[in-house]
Length: 224
Image (cartoon, rainbow, N blue to C red; front, top):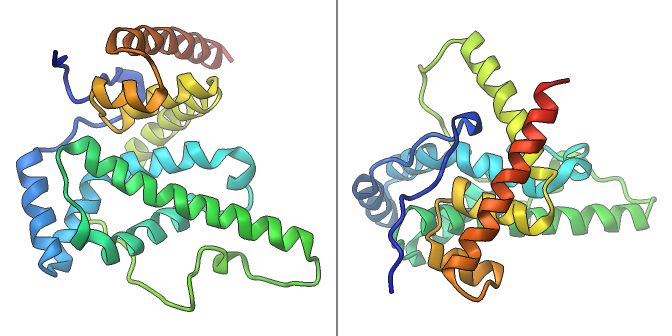
């Protein structure tokens, strides 16, 4: 039995934009696989905000004090350039999760390197080199000009930061449910498998509890 559901369940407070047209994204993937760098930049731009926020939450506050989220996202884009030819997208979620998995690998690598630096105080490594690989350099993601004004951006950023910090504060399973459903737009079947629930109904019930907990955290933050 297939459970039909919208791509994601975004609340207004989340600031997560609706997913773009899938058909256009798949066209951009195909062009990028053929070597079109412009198409690849446009593809990343479409999902940049979601990927950035997933990476930021999964990095955690401790790692963010010594490593820029932006650097991890840029390295993610660089790795994706090398691997786009092997990627077979099915939907928005598969594309977002593919990029998120690459980002997680960069986070793990960065964390391991920083732990190694701590163990060997004699090493002096520049912070911006933590995410570098084998001396290679890759062009970063070029976002298009235009868009909302500075005051709107600041207000939206503050609301997003509050929302993301509350998601980060959730218990691990609840956090993963919200990230998979709201941020990545994963299907209930994929979510059920990833969080190890026995069936879709159980995953949906756990997600409902996660939403209740998240709403409670948001109310607490807004009252401060």
